[in-house]
Length: 99
Image 1 (cartoon, rainbow, N blue to C red):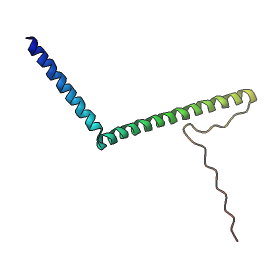
Image 2: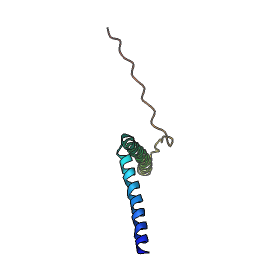
Image 3: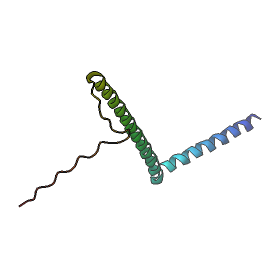
Image 4: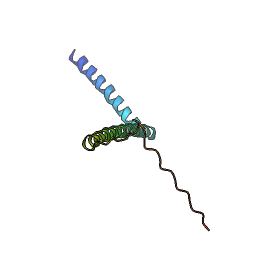
């Protein structure tokens, strides 16, 4: 009975090690490396996008705080841009004619 138990343990360990070795070898191939790199780039892009959204939200919140402070202290109403909009682009100057 003991020998049968240890035979079973050996078979299970052999299968587990074999699968792990096969997976490690697949990840070392160019296709496996490209897959890992692609996943890393997607994760980084998501993190950068999330960071940008957080920064924009913080900027809007701070802008609102400053506008409220100006109105409170100076009594001057501050014109505010609609939420989610960027400032209108400045008009371009006309170029002078060379000559």
